[in-house]
Length: 586
Image (cartoon, rainbow, N blue to C red):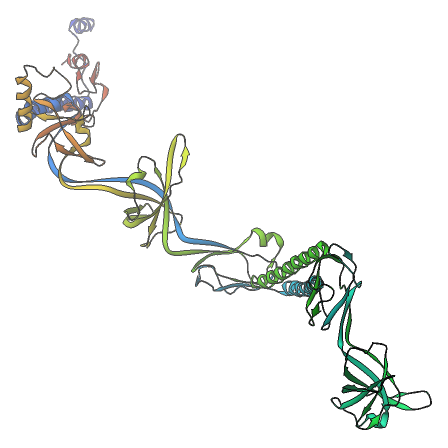
């Protein structure tokens, strides 16, 4: 037994066995490496030299043919939809709401009744205003009359026989200013027996005798008193007035008698001037002018003199203002009565109803609280804040394409309706409000956020290249196998110069200057320098190497293969040391 053991110890130890599962991973890695190498050979045989190298090295260049396409240049902005019109209905008065015959969601016509409010307080205010107006009217009328009294007129026709004031004199109300007299006709007042007077009528002829004279003067009865009076001795009489032409010798204190229809008067009477009146001042003032001096004849109501009074003028103006204020107060009170019936100011939909019948409106709610809110949803609007660099490209009437995240897969057409010239500056950038109207609103609601695209210019079927293909301001990489590229290369060679070596561009390509036109987010118009069908190259997104293409950039890390490790790098390379250690025992 001892001999056997030593014999075993002297034999070489076999390599440790690789577990079955690890063998399976090792086979997969080996197969993957073989596939990558085979794919590289196939790609090199199928692709042009430069493209194959690009694909294997991970170059970021992309290749394309110059083609014709439509280009649309547009501006894109975002905004929030608003109703065509909105109105917060408020109350201008206080009181209890008697009626509110509508509900949220109702569609109302303009002028539809919304609220009826109790008018008791309003009617009291109107009554007070009417009383104030009446008082103001009376005060104003008195002031007007006083102003009219500044013009002193004749109460009767006659001669101004005396004038007691001069221009500049101050007079007081009721003061005598002069006398007017008509001395051409005298009046004789004589008593007749009451029974005899009953037979006398106005217009009857009379024969008048002046006391102390023998000659009679014809006269005419102008008045017969209806009142009987008793003279001394018990005689009952009635007085008769007779107008007598004054031949010039009858004085106002002369006595005379008369016979009418053969009946003599009961006793003599006294002559007086038929027209004699005292000129008096109706108001206080200063004599401003005299229109009829002493000795002048004036007709009844003719102007004699004029007074002036600043006090009366101020009183008239004050009365006028008080009357106007009272009239305005009454009109306001009457107009305010209309505020107790509130109607819809616009046609629209009731969005919110905050007050109902039975609620009371206090001073606070009437001043600030919205009774209800109404939206006009016949169309929607939105306002864009357009940058100052873009505003010149927008004009009224331009069509706008609208999209909303809330309504997927659908576009709407709007129209620019107004462009404000009042800009807003913030952070050194100025924007201008542009209003857009949308008549087609199915699915849209006020408050939704939407995107607006405004087409400012477009071109159809023009030569175009990707915008990233334009480098160095206005240059494009063109294949020297294209006609344009060949011509550019020949021109360069003719100048005995060559394009400096540039490892960053594909082999067989040359920069060509182009003329640019319109551009959109992806393509730009080429108006000169390229021809349709030219092959171009441009830097795209970061590319992948061939290994990345097949491995997906896979880094399997280290896999324990028993006694060693197999490492696959990000580029697809394999750590040989690890594999050698793992496979050496086999």
